[in-house]
Image (cartoon, rainbow, N blue to C red):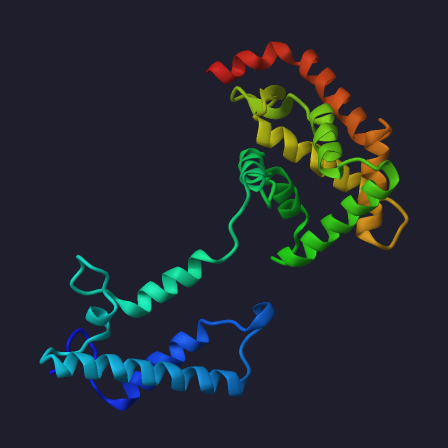
Length: 252
């Protein structure tokens, strides 16, 4: 009966020897050649057989785990011990490298996908072609970077903050024939959407056949304060001030 998966078959010695030889390296840390590996394997096989004969001569059941166990230990996992010893010889980082790793882990790593840019890309997308929209956005941002040598994502976000309107005008009626324009406040997402739609509207009126070029030109114009979106925002705010008295209609 086999003990802990070991048997006295010849194949067990050969497999064990091959595993032990495979963990050994030649001179200079290079793998052993086929001839060296075969000779080393034969050496291990003979050594294992001699140990087994010693055990059997003493009337004991031979197992490698008992044969190689240190004093005070009844049995060990020979293969696992060799593997562990080999693993301990692998690369060990220095204290300086460990400190560098700790510094890198503490560094803030930006997310791969920016939520705002992903939202703006979705507004560009047509017919569900997200990959094409992402490509157009990436090309436009790259052109902006070439021109300004700044982070184009930050440039776009700053433009949206400065262009985004605070309110929109919505038509309300009190039941009569006349409808009034009532100022309605916008949340951050609505403000971003309106500013970006103004940029896209102005970009589509430009002459270039390539949308990414038109978009990049409009972003650069907005960066310089020359986009029509700023005038539309100012006009919307003026109308909101003029019609501020009709805010009471929202409370009915």
